[in-house]
Image 1 (tube, rainbow, N blue to C red):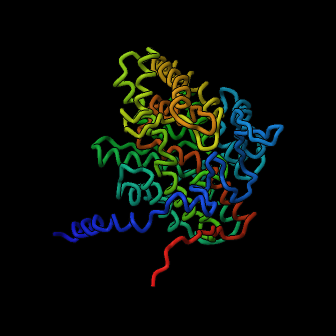
Image 2 (cartoon, rainbow, N blue to C red; image 1 turned 135 degrees about the vertical axis):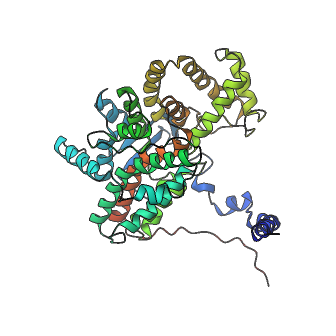
Image 3 (cartoon, rainbow, N blue to C red; image 1 turned 45 degrees about the horizontal axis):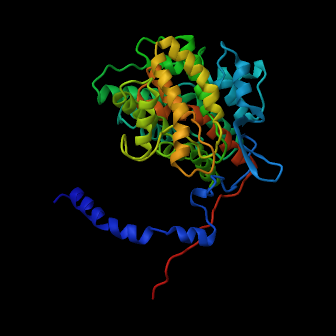
Amino acid sequence: MTKKEHLIKYANEKTQMCIANDSIPDRLFEEYGVNRGLRDVNGKGVLTGLTNIAEIISFRQGADGERVPCDGELWYRGYNVKSLISELGDREFGYERTAYLLMFGEKPTEEELAEFMKILADVRTLPTNFTRDVIMKAPSQDIMNSMTRSILTLAAYDAKTAESTLENNIRQCIQLVAEFPMLAVYGYHAYNHYENDSSMYIHRPKPELSTAENFLRMLRPDNKYTHLEAKVLDVALILHMEHGGGNNSTFTTRVVTSAGTDTYSAIAAAMSSLKGPKHGGANLKVMEMMQDIRHNVRDWQDRDEVRAYLARMLDGEVFDRKGLIYGMGHAVYSLSDPRERIFKHYVDELAEAKGREKEMRLYNLIEELAPELIAEKRHIFKGVSPNVDFYSGFVYEMLGIPMELYTPLFAVARIAGWSAHRLEEFVGMNKIIRPAYKSVMAKRE
């Protein structure tokens, strides 16, 4: 038996011991008033902090003091995201403008935006030979791991990694916002070349282009993209860049920041959180589910056939047998996810341009049928509606973005929100986050 085989055997033998000693019954959570996952049975989160950065609205206060479900709203620094995107029109890209708003708390003037975009363009580069020596040295299908390794390695190239000043933290955050698209795309190309035996393309970003444009330009062999493609991706980045302080990766950013660690370590921790399938991988599950539906449902427009298959999915008979319809429901939103409602217009437009109207009609039918079925078959405490992940994977597929980049693209958007929360934690809190855990272990003699 090899050493590795011995370790595997030992771990298998200890499995039941861990299950026996680490399981905590539900009755103890009820007895001590502790909420699993910091959320009560209605999905309301336990308050763990205050923020000026974003707000999610999914309930209104009724006349009798009860919480009444309402259409969801997402606000960035006091501005409704729907309005921020509407103000851009069809031509302008808004990721950089919105990143400025999130990080610094105010909308930029045109002069401030031009300067911010120039700075992003100037630092949208990696250290000499970094791509060769770090990204290409150990390619991985898990691009999130590749990016996290690169983030931590970038700390070694920064002479002021641990300098704990606000100015230094702002500099580091801006650099990471600029570098993230390169870390993601180059990580994918290295994997695709070494593991899939495909050609490698390392295209340099162009300073005059937006983040969305550069992402598509660096990803594609011919550097080409349409304005509509870049615009839809830009909207996706804006909708994913921030979602309040309560999501797992943002809370991770704040917890690790509160310990006084450096920017690279805090963002690497957020990356490790985001890659978890319960957090950033939701659109992948939607895509897998849709592939299964397309394969097993003969007539995509037959309401009865589609409904019957979705019912079997909820009963755990088909697909992954988990009894879930992915892309439906959200931990916070009830009647609607505002990001999905905003995004759907752009999804429709892109589907028409790509000749994918038939699939779009299938998505629309599932969006209509799934909430009805879930309401029938589940005891739910709030409304069920499609979330932004229901359509985002379909958009990425139409854009030719490989599935390995779906979660990394989420990170490319969310680095702006993480940076905003790191800066707010640094400025406004100045106290380590140290939650309490109640010990329920049995004492032994």
